Amino acid sequence: MCGIAGIVPRDPGQRPDRGQLQRMVEALARRGPDAQRIAVTSGFGLAVCRLAITEIEAGRQPASVARGALRAALNGQIYNYQELRRDLSRQGQRFTSGAEVEVLARGFRLHGERLPELLDGMYSLAVWDGAAQRLLLARDPAGQKPLYYAELPEALLFASEPKALLAHPEVSRDLDPLAVQQYLLHDYVPAPRTIYAAIRKLEPGEARVYEGARFAGSRFLVPGSWFGAPQGTKKPGTRAAPAARELLRLLENAVRKRTPTEVPYCVQLSGGLDSSLVAALLARNSPAPVSSFSIGFDDPSYDESRYARLAAEAIGSRHHETRLTPDRMLELVPEVFGYLDEPLADPSAVPTYLLARTMRGQDFPVTLAGDGGDELWAGYETFQVEPVARALAHTPGAVRQGLVRAALALPVPEGNMPLAMLASRFVAGLGLPAARRHQVWLSSAGPDLQQELLAAPADAESGSLFEAADRAWAASQGRPHLERLLALYFRLYLGDGVLAKADRMSMAHAVEVRAPFLDREVIAFSRQVAARHKLRLGQTKVLLKQAASQLLPPAISRRPKKGFGMPVSAWLRGPLRPEACRVLEPGRLARQGLFRPGPVQRLLGEHLAGRRDHRKALWALLAFQWWHESWA
Image 1: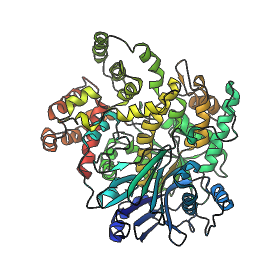
Image 2 (image 1 turned 135 degrees about the vertical axis):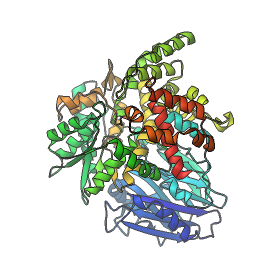
Image 3 (image 1 turned 45 degrees about the vertical axis):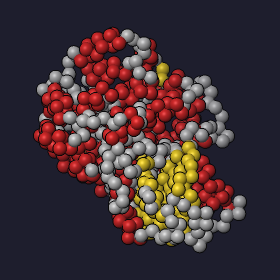
Image 4 (image 1 turned 180 degrees about the vertical axis):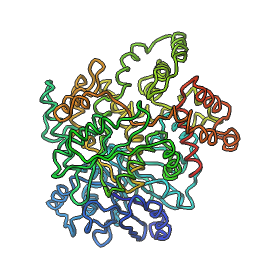
């Protein structure tokens, strides 16, 4: 696991500034505290800070191959690199080391931009062929590892995080107005945009090629070989029991593949189905009791610690529990948003940050997690209500307005997801195309609220607010409706949201998160399983729950979905109130010029008075302002 940064001058005879590369890689130092190296040659410069997890002695980066003609850097892990090495050797490639980065370098020479199609892993990578003046940048298809770039008049820059690009004096911090709006819609800025107008990020599964510093084209692995059936795998039958056994077998293989042999490892255990199943499979294949970690809250509607303890007892793990109080949260906010160089409105970023700090404090540089289970096996409540929304798709506008008024009239009790919030959000999505409907359901501020909040919305020529959702929906054309929804959530909510949060918050403490559900064979299997094995009569994750019942007690395997979050609503009315009033103070907003103080104060006032629950919109505004204080 590493942080990587590079410079490709437009002039192939120019050597990049080594001092500038040093500043870029130092901005990424928390990603890779174990080693730091820089390689500079005519036309190309590459820097790496390394977190040593595998090949601790031999895996130095950047790799220099063929007397420096080939250079490569990897952030992440390639699980099948030994197999690829043997294949490349049979095709005449002569290796001088056992390092996986040399496999990438020689694989690029032989296969060019098709190299990522052969990779099984989580990664972002850069490979340079000096003879051809050709650069490959690529991300894994799920989007587990990030890669950003900036195309300047004099050079192409790339790096694992925007903060490294911002260390270059020619990279502007000016905001992309449409990205601000997309942030309010998604809770993150979906690729290829970033919050900065001058910086872009590779999309999950994108392989981007430059000749010199000039863009030469992209290839996408989704929905290509990644989602195809693994070679030699038969399509699962219609019977649930054999399919559940096969799913368990594939997940167990995925866990084994991700269990390191050279460093200590642990597992994140929320008490939910996905993380508990990963923990159970890890425990079953570990020679000694595994260590598990969870976060607890004092608010019972958010606290899952008793379920985490129940799962830990069932699998026999050494369990560690950390509690997040409002005071501790306020202490962590400057650290979290001082590290996040793009705004992220997921409140669980704070407990995720604390969880990673706790694991690293116990000397665990690798953790396994349950990310991806909901997006592959239809775990979210939105999938349950989708049939109702489709049935009401053509509801007359006057009727929808009546439903909105009725939803707003519901009482506003405290709790994880009060009925008034769910009802009003559901009604707001009616009448929209499916992809846009789900995005509005998930949003902190949909189009109508944005019109109130924004001082100057982006003009229509800048692009569409829904461009990412529309593009993701179009990519799955021709597939069954549920599969299209799952592909939408996989590409956006998982790829740009959940996994971005996991990467940033874990790497802030040099902890590598590995997700067995995102194994390519597990994904391919899920794509072949019939919809009724995922969602049936309102029950989610049907087949996954059947598989988990073989290893976990019913209280865990049959437990309904519960998101990982914080008691934001109650905290805003209590211990967070002074900070919210400070950050959203009208004069401060007026000087910033992005949000209209009046509508923001209305949201805050209604929430504090208990008349409405505006937790999502208010947290998104707070998160943006906290980020803005550190980075804009």
